[in-house]
Amino acid sequence: ELAAVAANGREGIAALDRHRPDVLLVDLDLPDVRGLELIRHAHAEIPECDAMVVTVFGDERHVLESIEAGATGYLLKDLSLIHI
Figure: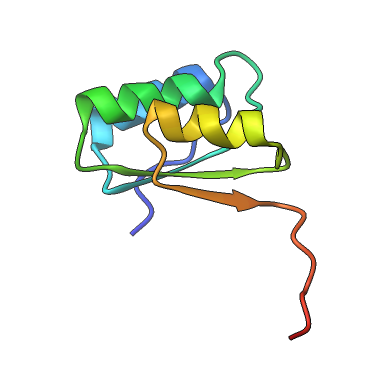
């Protein structure tokens, strides 16, 4: 069930506090508050919430920062199909 959609980080933090979701899908590039702050907030206030990053940033620094902030998953928006 979709609990909330937020257009920016401030709305995201308010939605986290209000709805206390099981899963957070978050982009790292938000207009006002970095996505990492939402992950940190969720990790601190709702430890049972899994934070999944969905972003275009695939470099090691962004991945490691996300994991250190408490993210439990990381998906790239620009994934291409891989033929096996």
